[in-house]
Amino acid sequence: MKIAIVGAGISGLTTALSLHAAGLPATVFEAVARPAPLGVGINVLPHAMRELTALGLLPDLRAAGVEIDELVYLMKDGREIWRERRGLAAGYAWPQVAIHRGELQTRLLAAVQARLGPQAVRFGHALQRLETGDDGVTAHFADRATGAPAGRVEADVLIAADGIHSAARRQFYPDEGRPRWNGVTLYRSTSRSGKVLGGRSMLWAGHARQKFVAYPIGYDPETGETRLNWICDLKTAEPGAAPPAEDWNRQGDRAALMAPYAAWRWPGVDVPALIAASEGIYEFPMVDRDPLPRWTFGRTTLLGDAAHPMYPIGSNGATQGIIDARAVAFHLATAPTPGEALSRYEAERRPATGRIVLTNRQGGPDTVMELAEQRAPDPADDLDALVPMAERQAIADGYKRVAGFDPAALTAPSQYVAPR
Image: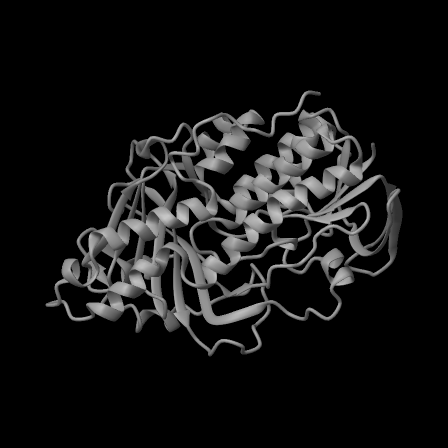
């Protein structure tokens, strides 16, 4: 079986590694001519780390990132809303790893080239169109910089992991238009700092209209210096407005953040100081797309952000793409035909990810912050009486079930290990 993967992001590269582990050859076609470690930090949750562990990547990713052991929610005045253990500290068999997105992608790329060969990833191939049927796919590529043809590829199966602006998705859904924006702009950067909270904690503070998120993605245990990834979420427009371009390189204005966050200081956390000490700031609209009624067309299917872009709430974007990759490889290795494999993959993953997209639109686990802001905005309000702890627990537990990392269910090794 000849398999083509479009997109050399986290999902596409994990797909290539998963297919290789199952004894299926694949080639990855990437639009950019030269890879670059774009983006800032992400969290890889335990159910995705289980899959990367099955691929033999756990030691490398542990060395590259920080194992998170705690999540803390605060109100904007510093009152604690919720605190829970995470990763190994919560009893999972696999850690939760916070890592620079570009670092993860770079290490996945190195693994693909080492295992599948240096020609397994073809750069400078932007998908233009494809012809897909029940017996195969023909994909036409071009050089993105010049528009010149870069060749055509025939494959038995094509997996489109080409992101939120997927060319394959656009061909299947030409009237879908631009991604849906909720009016929130994410300002993202990193700062060198001492330990924030316990040094391995994720911090969420604020409410839906103004939020601050921080977690370490690099840590020097000798000096105590931390590379802290942070995000300032600000409501800058009304829902339904046309979003600005989604570009990881779009520069943000530091001065625009200083006034809104001037008073956001709590014991061990000084948000204005972190903003002032930051490296380059990038801005990105919080966008997603509606869940689709169908991913698979003939021998072509969608995967990762091409299939289910979601708001970055609950740390699930990259995690769900990694699980997609493992699922599609498993079904291609075990189903009697490629068509049946793609049907099984979609039947498993499309409803599951659609639920997460819609749950994230409603706030996901961050709902607890909005409830606290609505019911107990004054520091003198009795938060425990107005937002009972049982309600907070139910929100946290419910999201874990929706997103697939309920500790009670996540105990066995990967179900996606296929015989070669």
